[in-house]
Amino acid sequence: MLKLEADHSEEYQQTESVFLEIKGKPVPFFVLSYRVQPGGKTAVLLLEDVDTVEKARELTGVPVLLPLSEKVQTETLPFAELEGFKVSDQAAGPLGTIREIVHYPGHSVAVLTYREREVMIPLNEALIEKIDKQKKELFVNLPEGLLEIYLD
Image 1 (cartoon, rainbow, N blue to C red):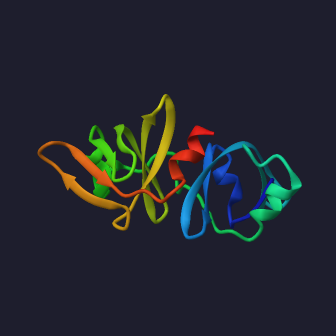
Image 2: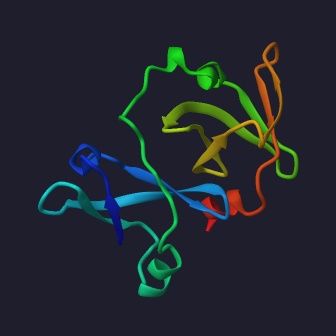
């Protein structure tokens, strides 16, 4: 469970996922339920894979990154043109093709299928090694353990 404090927390009721900033990196969590508390400034979220008190305590105080809206107009954002690019990681090799770019406040995420699982890769300059627009390829250096989150 996650307690969210926002001026208009009811605006996020359709949110399917949130990113929690863990060790300086955005880690995605799927929202199983969302309940706005009286007054509308606080909401309680039940997150997938956070099923014990111990796991919830580990997340106490970590920053929550929420989407501004379901979809942001991709034409105005710099990473929008990466949809359809093939992604390769420095350590893991070829990962798959970007199916969608999802935009969150302050960052964008590439959605692709890797080993038959949906994977979200944060798009930021620190992780991107090279972009080959002609070959439609994106080369990244992902943090250790990011892909394993999706494969467990």
